[in-house]
Length: 351
Image (tube, rainbow, N blue to C red; front, side, top):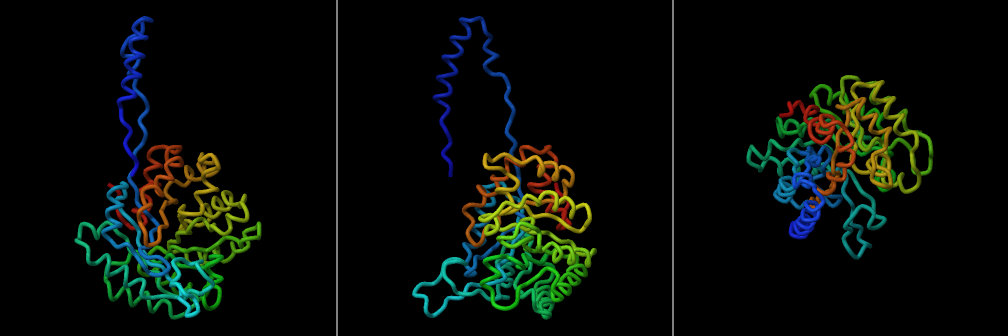
């Protein structure tokens, strides 16, 4: 927690300035000229994992405390669709996805962990969360059965599907089985089910590979979105990833996002994690003009989120990282991006 600065030094400086100013014939009121007030935002976290890759969580009370401290009114909440294996030849339990060379495997129990955590809350607190279903293998034609089962077991609880882990560089390489794709036939069944139940689908689908400078996976995304016009898609991180960012800067990204938003009314963009830096904010933490123009043009098609996994102490600071972007936008657009756009996706009228 940041320490609040004392006002005493400022008062001493002001007093000295007043004495000098009076001697020069300046009015006292000139030293108290009103200054522009910094905006204070209220947030909806549109991308939050309740557990990490070991399926561990600090718990709901820790999350709620951080939400209350950080002006976060609501949060999308989900598990992680894979779990890291602890291999018998590793002397210590891995603490993160890349801790060792062990693989990850699809883990359906993650949805039950989220459901039980949310359902044990009082109704007032429960209403602050929008749980999503994520614990299925997106290459399995049986995936819809798990989603239907969760909807039946917990009627009215789940508000969306995802984050569906599709092309995801390092994670994909460690996951057992075939490479998941946005246009896989198994996912067609998921999208159709989502449309039937009016559930948005949050997908992580990299737009390119780590070393390829062109959007080589664009077709996979577009085929999914175009084949299912009645399904609402939220594209996580606008197709970027940390691994891609380490190797290259995708100059084509703003124009590609603009083209996709113009073409597909059912597509929304999640600006969490790897897309904020270096794409939206430059190396001086200033918002780039092309992204400001894009958000002004489509003010209700973007959301922001923390993408935290299981640990929530950084919730406030992570969402505040978006403030330079928000401050550069018109007030109404900024508030839509910070809080209200995701609520509208959930069918909730912002108040």
